[in-house]
Length: 487
Image (cartoon, rainbow, N blue to C red; front, side, top):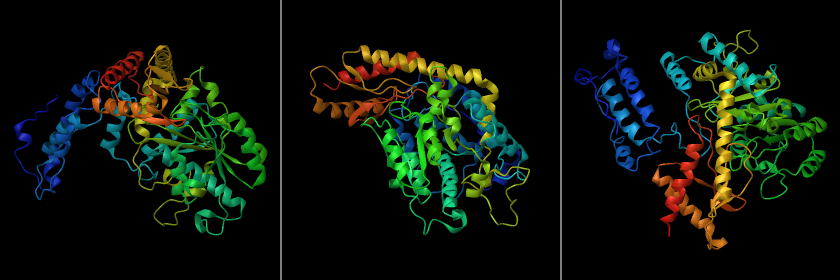
């Protein structure tokens, strides 16, 4: 356990107003800085979570104090509780969800973001934040092989990046019906057709829900229960209706599978449709010669989303939305009509006119720091290492008599289940669910279960910069050890 001890002088005065800490404002920051090194070193060996964390979590509770304990004391208390009770996603054995860690440069860049506390939405509030966002959007387009002419905006997540891209699509679609949806809304318009494969992620549906288009209006066209797209059926649907939005998926969260984006781009061109690509983590396939073919066609899309807190390994929250025409974003989010806010079209970019947020932090800074630190080659090396680790894990599963690989390993996700000899098929889902619960409770490695083709499966995702083949092997070792205890 890491224990933080601060000098007694930091805790003797009870501070009821932060003005009294004017001369010692950095004391709490010093505590965090001093705690950082031992905490980060501990990630190499510590479990993903501590089984005793419930007691620490209880220490967060209690009534709001009438009189505070002062900044340094509060920070020291939060450090003690947090480093013990947190889920240590920055460590190398977090395979759950699709979550990266934070590279050293990105973490430091995020600290700078909090230190400077820039309002990142309006140039006049922070030319520094606005220029940094413009630069990193350009760097990300280079990294992914997207045209430099595309517009873009940073968002808190892929979900909000979907909101940005699909709001631009909605404005385009409504314009085809002669309606300015930003000012007049959706009333009187038909339902916007949104078509995709069975690989579509729930975040796309959530974005449609937020935009008032309806979560369940999205239609899927799949050949089978793997979710693979049925292109002829999709094209037939396009021929029956008017303007439509196609959602292409790059990197399924269960298997890493992708839609054929080039084929979807061809369909969009033939039928005058809008192509939106969900590349939340799959856009990083463009970095490796082994997987670049999966991203082919993304550069022909009208809008593309990706996530920063996945394979880019920057701290939560971070997403990006790219659009073919920046004006599509300003039509969806600009035209505030407030006298004190600059209008879109200014030479100085105001990013709050290109996305769903008005107040926004300078989230470009950790992205700038990590891309400046490691560059294209560093990120390519990380992606290649994760592809190697996933391929290695896939081979371990294939060669094991008690494990079953359920989908080809295409990116950095491996889809498999525990299948010991002699267990009837109808008992396997319950067995894997029990094993998954034990794995999460154990905490040494973290990989939950999902459902794929009607089966309960494990689908560890390798996008954390610390993960190597050694951690992939440890996952199998711990899984087998826990399985043996199930009886």
